[in-house]
Image 1 (tube, rainbow, N blue to C red):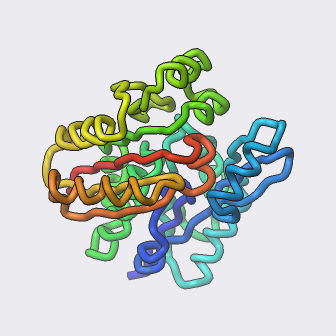
Image 2: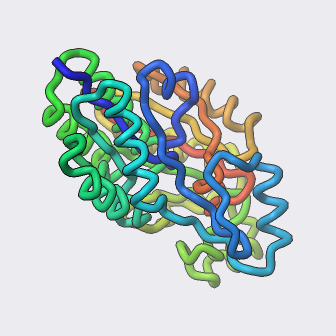
Length: 280
C-alpha cells in the first residue's frame, strides 16, 4: 500500500523529535512585523518579544500561502507518498484551512489530498496530528485517520494563564477593558481557548491558585488522557506544572513544549497552559 503522508501547520507546537519520528511535514505560518513576513520558528522567544515591543505597527500572524501547501504536497509525492492527509488548526482562529484547501485544489491530478480542520489550537491540534499519524502507522485508512484527528481536536481542552493580557488585547482576542482591569487588580487570569476566542474562567491572584484551577479543568476530561504542558518563555513554571500533572492526572503521555512564535505573539511572555485530550 502507498504511504499516506501527514502535512500539518506549525501552530501545532509539536516537539521536533515527534515531528521527525512520525515523518510529519510542517508548513510554517508567518509573522507580519512592520510589513515583513517572518516564518514561524525563525525567531527565538527573546527576539520575538523584543521586536513586538519595539514595533510601532501591530504584529500580526499570517496564514501560509496556498503555494506553500502545494510545495509540501509535491515534496511528499516525490518522496513516495500515494496520498496526503493535511491537518490544520481551527478555521475559527486562522485562514490556514482555506489556504490548505486552495493548495489541495492546485495539487489535483498530481497527488490525492484530504484536508481536515481539526478544530484544535496549539497542542489540542498537535495531539490530533499525532493521533492521525499513529493511526496510519497502525494500519488505519486515511479516512479513519482523518475522522480520528477531527474527534481529538474538537474534543480537546486548552486552558492557560498569562502574566499579561496586553498581547491578547493587541491581537483583538479580548477587549482592552478586560486587559486594563486585570493589570490594575493584579489578577492572574485563567483562560479557556475555544470557538475562536479566549474566555476567562477564573481570576486568581497567584500562580499557585491559577495552577490549581488548570488542573481542575484537566480533571474534568474523561480518562485516559494525553496532556501537553505549553509555555511561552516560562520554562520553570512549565516544569513545575508538569510535575503537578504527573502526580494529579497520571496521563498516558505528557509532553512539554514551548509555543511557536505565531502562538506566543498572542499570549506574550509568561504564558503557561495545558492541552488535554482523551485518548482514543
